[in-house]
Amino acid sequence: MDRNQIYTVGAISSETMTTGTDGSYSGSIALSQPRILEKIFYDRGDLVTGCDITVVDGDSGETFWTQENLGTNDLVKYPKLLSQGSTGTDISTEYQKPFTKSLSITLVQGGDTKTGVLYAYWR
Image 1 (cartoon, one colour):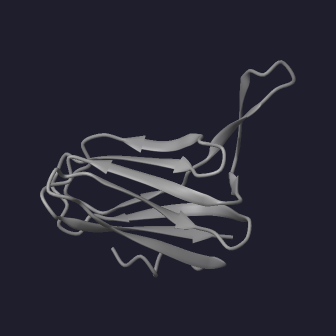
Image 2 (cartoon, rainbow, N blue to C red; image 1 turned 60 degrees about the vertical axis):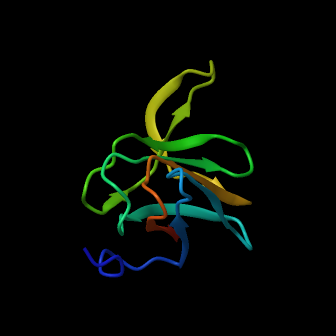
């Protein structure tokens, strides 16, 4: 899958994720201005099958994508969150989350010194 053929958005950021000898990685994609996250492209590279990823809003600490046991293929995610009604309960209307600071990325069980890339497509 060619990450640039999916569709064009306002900006693309990327983070190369190279694991340590314990198979873990922690890093972030910093923003120079507030943006809306359109999609995430996970380029597996040579990360091992079965690794786990968590992506968090670096400002609020809110987790918006967690996936365990990633497979052998690259992956595209279109992260959306549920809106909340006046009582604080989730309703079925979804929205794209605005970010002001960064995306924090944590990867575990990725294999000894393996590399993949996470691309963030912004509006």
